[in-house]
Image (cartoon, rainbow, N blue to C red; front, side, top):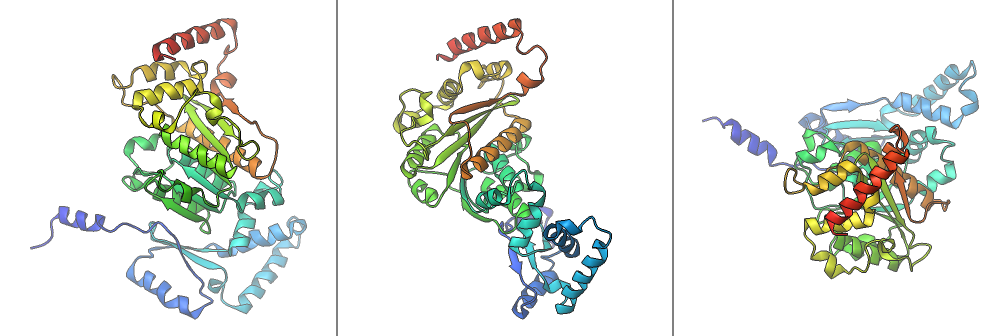
Length: 395
């Protein structure tokens, strides 16, 4: 009797795809057989090979004064012919296999890949700044907004070494603000994020902590970090993060979405280890007190931290509807992207020792794009609403 469709689905779903790329150097005979086996088995079903174009870009980046001269095309053709005379083009560079995509891509070696991939960053980011950015080690705790941060860092040629911590799996309701599709539903968020980062930079070195951050593992997580991105919801774990950052004298950057807007908090324990936790905005708190809070208590304290005067009108109304007409506080994909870009900017500035706000920045789409936002009437209305909201929240 043939298998039922449910049996076939269960069998196919029982084998999870590996979330780490695999490299092959076909100039080495030992790599031929395993690469050929992946093709023969069907594990590699797609090949991406635009290596010649990558070489053309590399030659241009290395010889920028030649690119717009009449002889550039012939000059590169001679260079390419010389490379092919040394060995077949398939044996130059590396082949990277992405198991979750069943795809192999032919790419430049790491230093050349990085040079070409970040060529259009110059001189908005200088070469020296780019190298400091790339060679840092970053920790990201929490991968909702944190995934946007990770992707923004990777896109801008940021840290090759990342440690990612989150215990949750990707749910359908997450996909309004996380850059991924239905093909990744149900997988761990750390794996979801790692796959996207590897697709941007296959040479990334990513350490996954699928248990999240706990009192037992946080010390090991912080080992070797240059900076920490805090995007965890659990306030008690946020407290532990600050204890570690203070002890190790590294900066914390955190961003929270607020409707269509962003609130970016920066704690420079690297410059001043006596910086008050949360800049003192939560008052006198402890790990034990924060650990005892329920979701509503967390929402109340986060509101106090953000400041009721900074919470948008629709966010205020939404927070009052939690557990009534909505399940949790709302978040938007656009705000997550704004947060990701803002945090990546802060990280790059901190790593390069450049001037940066030491406490908080409000990034408001409403302020910049809503007509009459600063009118006396609109300002007075926001003040009245925020005072009423603060009273309702008990803060």
